[in-house]
Structures are given as structure tokens and as C-alpha cells.
Length: 350
Image 1 (cartoon, rainbow, N blue to C red):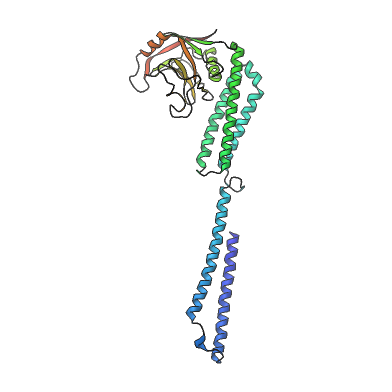
Image 2: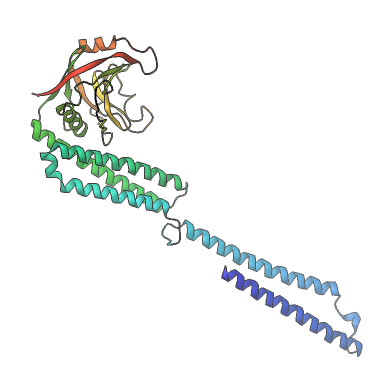
């Protein structure tokens, strides 16, 4: 602004000087004409003098305009540069804060690994914390992306890539800790069977191997061990799934969700497998009563992520048929009018 003011002031001085000089020249020429020293007819016409003056003024204005445009372009470039201290860093600050939180949870995960193996409760608390961090991270990343234009600086894209790599590393470490905890609790290479007594008959579900779905398997068996599923039930009989949750359970209870959508192409939603419902998933889960590999796989329900598939029914197929026939809504959610209650869930190992 001070530069533009300075240029204006100098232009004004030059303009006034030109006018003063022109007036002085006019007086001198007039005097000379009067004494006969100059032939008046040989003098340039006044309109030619005015034209010259206008051209000079226009040229100066154009020069000032070009200088102003250069300053404006420089200002815009400074504002768009994410490394410039004067630029608006809101989106980059959001990304930086998000990365710091993930680094903090990663540090906690590493420092408390021994506690996780020895204490299921500590593992649950950390899982919830990681889940909260992911939700907050996703929100901030979306906000930062919405603030960035299509031609966002390469540095922003690089920061986002680094952020995603760090999150992938954190979830991978959580899977490792879950696998170690399962093997310590039930033994390596063992089959973990969840048995359920329901008002429609018994069910037996073999958990997925800890080599492919360690985290969600650990999440589900922890809920079984704690008695969470006792008193819950099957509430939906749709054409593709039989869904269970704890809405029928009496008394206060929580709704523990998974921290991230764990998924493996080696363990997909085939007939009679079980999966976690929702985004983020849990605690609702379901039995696939048709092949849902495509519908419940990556991108099958809108979000790019898939529903976790973490087990398969190995006994109780007559119970499945009874649940399918339970009276339920003919459309919409297909809710069962009188939910099929899970009276008891327990674990056996073979």
C-alpha cells in the first residue's frame, strides 16, 4: 500500500512539474512572438501540445497499472504458498494436529504392549482410544480436504499421504497386539468356537484365524467373555442377513464399536459367515444367509471400506432356519416382532 502511495505521489509531482514547465515555455514563447523573434505560424498548434501531454499522462498511468498488477500477483502467490508465513495455514494446521495425535497413540501403544498382553481391559481401553482418534482424524482430514482446491499445493498431498501411512502402521500394530493376546489366552493355532444358546435353538460360530482377522476376533471374544451378549438377541430377519444387537437386553449397557474396519480378502462374506454391521462397525453383527461377498465387501455399501468378516457358523443351521421364519416386518428393516434372545454365550477351544 505504501509503495502504491509513493508511486502516486511521485506521479503527481512529475505531472505538476510538466504543467509548470509547459506554462513557463508558453510565456517565453509568447514574449518572443511579441518581439518578432519567432514566427507564430511556424509554432505547433495547441491541440498538438495537448495531445502530447495526454499521451505522456496515459503512458505514466499504464506504467503504474502494470506495477500494481505485479504487486497483486505477488500477493496472491504469497497467500497460496503453504510455506509462506503470511499465508492462511488452517488446513495444514488441521493435518499437523491430526498427525500429532496419531503419533501420541502410537507411542502409547508401543509403551503399553506388555500391559495389553496381560490385561484385556487395557486393550479394550486403548482400542476405544484409537477408534476415537481415527474418527477425529477422519473428520479433520475431510475438513482440510474441503478447504483445499483442486490445484492444492503438492506439499498438502504429501502430508496427507504421510498421515495415511502412519495410520496404517498404527492399525497394523494393533492387529499384532491382538494376535499376541489371542495366542496367549487360547493358544497358537487353536480353533476358537463361540457357542450361543438362543430361544430358537443353539448356534456355534468358529472364529476366523488370528492370522487374517486378529483384531475383530479379539473384540468379539472379549465381549463374549465379559457376558455382554447374554440377554441380547436377533432383531432382524432380512433376505440377506440375520442381524443381532443388544436392544432387547434389559438394564443399562454400552455399545462398543470397533476401532477400524479390519478386512481380509482371504476371509470374505460367503454363505453362513458372520460380519460386523455398520460404519464404524459394531456392536451389531449378522449371519450371512446368502453370498454377500460383493455386497458387503469393499465399496459394496457405499463407503470404500468393507464390513469385517470374522467367523462362520459350524453348527445350528436349524436355528438359522427358525430365525428366518420368525414373524417380522415385511419391508424396510425387516425387524423381528419378538426378538430371538441369546440367553448365554460362551467359548470353547479345540
